[in-house]
Amino acid sequence: MSTYLHPSAIIAESANIAASAKVGPYCVIGPHVVLGDDVVLHSHVAIDGHTEIGAGTHIFPFASIGHPPQDKKYAGEPTRLVIGKNNTIREHVTMNPGTVGGGGLTKIGDNNLFMAGAHIAHDCMVGNHCILANNAAVAGHVTIGDFVIIGGMSAIHQFVRIGTHAFIGGMSAVEKDVIPYGTAKGERASLDGLNLVGLKRRNFERESIHALRHAFKELFQSRNGTLNDRATALKAKYPQAEAQTLIDFVLAETDRAFCTPRSKHSATDE
Image (cartoon, rainbow, N blue to C red; front, side, top):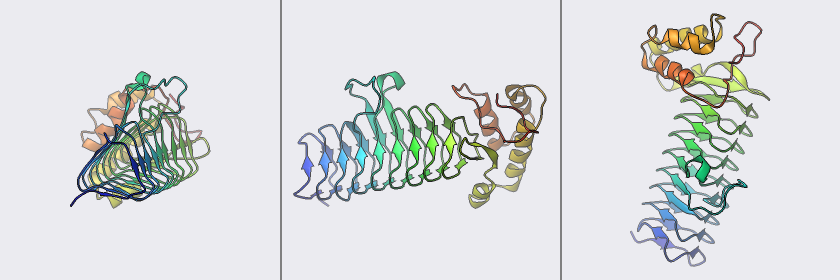
């Protein structure tokens, strides 16, 4: 199939567009843009910068992809935005490339859904099979694991990590790291337990869920030592892969504190 380019689209001559891609009416594509196989720009999509869009991705009207990051330190450097395969990017979504200070790359994985108005800022790393609901806003340098769901009108603070299979409730402000398999919500988000609904829907084994529940309880309801001490002690106790993912996340270096349960009986933020 030859490339379909609507005659009203404005496309730089040096843009690299796959033969099976489709560019709808009134799209604007910059000179360093790469569109992979079967990419579809429905209409009124603006793409610029050193931006690569993977095969099968669909982008809907008025999305702004790859334009300069909203960072005063950015001075026009040729940083990158790389979007993986089979993503759905809905109306008015904005995604910015990286900055030199943040590594120069914003990277989006495969099979994600970005609902209308969602924003991905500079130097973010988003995994696979994630859902960002309407108007979810992700600040710079955020890392989001696989299968994460972020509810509508939520905001993620810069440098925060959201662990794999985590769930963020709608209208939440997330200022701290959210553990893998965790649920966080609230005006200043706190940890609301494990994402048990998501785990069951994705057919996690009962043994793995039980190990996660016990590890979670020992991490966040015990008052023995620091959070780091407790995580270190659990490494040998729970060999299941999911529990190890949770424990390793807690032990990894981070610029933020952790979301913890909002309870007088729970461990304080550490």
